[in-house]
Length: 225
Image 1 (cartoon, rainbow, N blue to C red):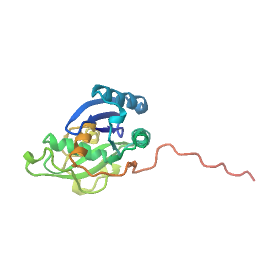
Image 2: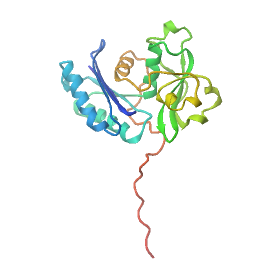
Image 3: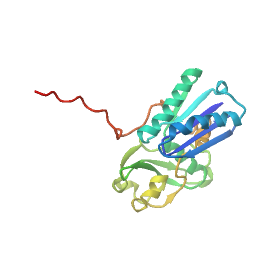
């Protein structure tokens, strides 16, 4: 069984895939409470499927980009479980998961963007290429044009102007984008299905922060002479 989870946004989302389909999902959206939500959600999907942690054979985890604290909760949990169980962990860019769902729902055609909230009036974003024929969208491989980036929504490069945008970033800054479509936040069910079908790039389970955390360790005090 494949356990999938993502904590790169204010939402915590977990799913269990039995090798054929998703058999259980849980999600919650309580900002700043990722740690409190994740473990119960994992326990709930296992219980619903009549499974135990020992039945999990691999873990897929969203690696962001996302804020430092929430993203760290999911990655530490995934890597710790994998180490204890002796199973592999696969990292997936969270923006790729949103792109996969947009493809499956037929919301995009040709080039499009995915943008999530990076706070500070900025977005995490990446460009993608979808099949021109919408009937080939569901199940299509996710084709990302470059590595994810972060920056002010109003300062994206010229080639992005007028493209359809998927994700919460488009809703938060509509003046900076063209047409805005869903989904807004990632789904662990889509993550699990995309990994099982080999539709997305698999990465090391390392966080995509793209910038330094908001809270920095204090520097050593200056010597008094």
